[in-house]
Amino acid sequence: MPGLIDYSGDDEFCTGGSGLMLSLGSHVDVYCPPRKRSRISAPYAIEGRFFDEEKRASIDILPDECLFEIFRRLPGGQERSASAGVSKRWLMLLSSLKPSEIFRNERSSDVEMTPADEDHEVECDGYLTRCLEGKKATDVRLAAISVGTSCRGGLGKLSIRGSNTVPGVTNLGLSAVAHGCPSLKVLSLWNVPAVGDESLFEIARECHSLEKLDLCQCPSISDNGLVAIAKSCPNLTSISFESCPNVGNESLRAIGKYCQKLQSVTIKDCGRIGDQGVAGLVSMGCNNLTKIKLQSLNISDFSLAVLGHYGKAITSLVLHGLQNVSQKGFWVMGNALGLQTLASLAITSCRGMTDMSLEAVAKGCPNLKQMCLRKCCFVSDNGLVAFSKVASSLESLQLEECNRITQTGILNALSNCNSKLKSLTLVKCMGIKDLPSESQYLSPCLSLRSLSIRSCPGFGGSSLPMVGNLCPQIHHLDLSGLCGITDAALLSLVESCEALVKVNLTDCLNLTDEVVSALARLHGETLEVLNLDGCRNVTDAGLAALATNCPSLNDLDVSRCSITDSGVAALSRGVQSNLQVLSLSSCFKVTSKSLPSLKKLGKSLVGLNIQHCNSINSSTVERLVENLWRCDILV
Image (cartoon, rainbow, N blue to C red; front, top):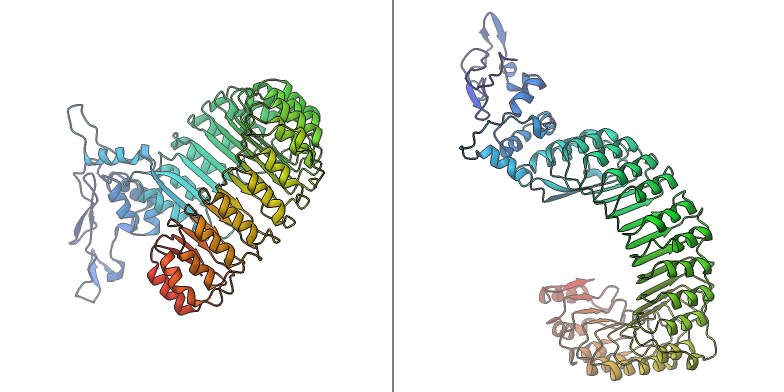
């Protein structure tokens, strides 16, 4: 080795004969023969042996150990990046260089920083982002990223969305990133089965600035690699594990113990994680842990009790598909009185969530502002009303597929939340059906600003007037999928509301121009967004009313309506000067004759949807694209 490479740069490496001195940097000089083809085609003799011109000596004949010593003496990132482009072999060798192995001149305190040192400073910034997906996710690409980004600020975020294709990403590629990108802060690995603990060990050794780790479908990663990460990456603030069968309790205990800056945890479908892991994570000193999501785990009431007792910093909690948690677990979680700062709670498909559980949670979480219940089949009107009485800070309530809740429960809950509640969302709640009017016995909810009732087939004629009487301050109204409501029912709600701003009536099949005209007449000054997609009985008359009365309208969707060229023309002559998005999808009666009107509207449009408008020919589309060059046109 000393004979080949001189550490002080004084000696030369010579194979004999005349050649070219190839300078690889200020530290290493390698003596090589010229690469140009010789004008003499006959073999020539050196020291009694014959060599063909194709067999002349090259730097590539050096073993990896020698090349490694050369590469680590290159003066900066640009030189290493240029060398990596010579061959795959050089690339992989350069990508194996660790920051600690790069040779640097010793500097005295009174010497200015050298270019190599300046490169080193830049490498530590870590602001670049790279994302590899599918077949593009390979070890060679990762090695190239590792070497190439070092002289441009360093890689800060890496996302790999792999596949089961060969070769894919392995430990070799991710280790290269660890060696070349010590400033890495965010690492996301999805569906990379060949990446295991070996590469995580390298990440732990080199990337001490790691802040976010996201692992999904990584079967080769186990507790060993994650424990190493936890011990070596104290700045970790967010972790996410999904479908990682070999990640277990030991990982969570180590993270809870060593990662004191941890703020967010998401764990989904990891069969080896149980109560001990959750308890270790929450109870071992993570004082900054504010967001937790637990989904499809084999945990019991014990985990919920730990959350209720130790979760003093938790502000957002999501519990999804916890089949082994009973009513007792939720009851204890609420009565432990540790979730005083909890502001957002979402519970989905948990059979332990009952009326008693819901009331206990409300009592134990006095600062709860957002509540979402999905597929909680044992929650009824009694639980909802009791919850609404206790949850004095509640601002947003979402109920989805909670089929034991009826109209009575909803109206009484609205009446109880008359000072704070701003948003109510009901989705696919099959128990909601029209009942005789009872709103005269209820207090109005003057705080409600957003009402969304979607795909609740029983919600119809008599329900809407009662909602209008209870909630006159609604600004955002979404009734999409309520195919049973009529003009008369919606008119009573529209007339009760003081200022509607956004209205979504998608697939309300029975509505006609009458209700559209009423919307325009009563709320034209404030209406900004209107979606009538699928309202097949809305015609040019309704569009003309909007054009005449709605100066603030900026987003209009009349897809699948009975609109013709006359309606588009009326819209182009309307008072709305700031219309930015217009959708005419599947309006078969709109033809190429609307070109002048669309060009006029195009002065303000940034989005135009004319998909499935079969009466608009291709030449018209081309002219629209040419004239409305600022507008995104879907055809």
